[in-house]
Image (cartoon, rainbow, N blue to C red; front, side):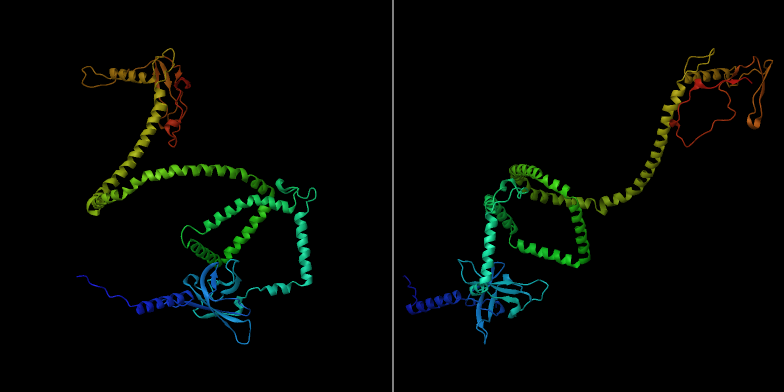
Length: 480
């Protein structure tokens, strides 16, 4: 069985439609939104005709922040009025030194709007319902006021000004007057030069538009954050007035130094165009490299996506490694090994000193002892013709043979107790005095000659820094 739904009666439908239309008309013509918070109310007193209508917009820096809700004429005056405005949240806060000026809107908009300036941040804040005094407001400039200023003398002066301005644009320059101007505008009138400049205006406006768009930032509130940052910078500068004064003085000295080097500065500026052309080519190459860079970024993206699982897999290993290096594990082992490491360090220091002395000894052997042992002493007619070290070894064999006893169970040195008939005497040998003896033959001399005292021993100079001795250059002394 089919159930029939109850239908709304025509009277109820009409009443609902009437309420909806009334609510839409109420909101469209400026009524407050139900269940919304109370708006911020700001009043401003004007002494001239405001020419405002309800709801005229209220703007801060060209941005709509509210609207005019009422204009009440003051009793006893045909022009003075108090304007009541509702300010949105994007127009707050408003400070005590705020100003309000009535400005004309653009041609397509028509009428006027309130140009509100919220004041400086260091001024006190205004509460809702506060009124800006007459000193902080200004009305629109009416056409009758402009025409009242244009008296006959003023109009004559204005005509003279316009005629002079036209003559300045139309008269060609005298020969040599524009010698310092750019070659593209030499000989042209002011108007022609302005027309020539228009061909560069399109690129200039385009560049200005790019700059203005960049100043807006890439995210919402970038400009407001930049302004807030500048506010902090200026507040910091204001708190360091003495340092700022010193900076200005130093900047003045810098400018004087630059002014004294005008020619050098001019040469530097003249060298900037080639630099800029080179920089432009470099930036072009850099821009061309962005394509491969983006391709590289896309290629490396899968590896970056695997980085998170890799880190997740590494976390347990890091936990085990942390436990391994804790005090209970490797930390205690390191404490036990510390004395051994300290002893090893001291041993290394001693070994380093030993190696240093061993190196000095080796250099002495290489530089002094070996070259000395390799020398062959020339002592005719008894020259052996062999190096000194071989003579040393041969003398050892001779001494060993001379020291053997008859049965090989000991050693003694055979010597001749008697001498010859030639007496010999040495010089005074210190505390022992001279030595006396008898020689078989008269001595020819001694080699090397006795210098009378032992050579000086210098222990501060390393052995290898001394020159090897020349055994064949020793002097032969007279016989005793």
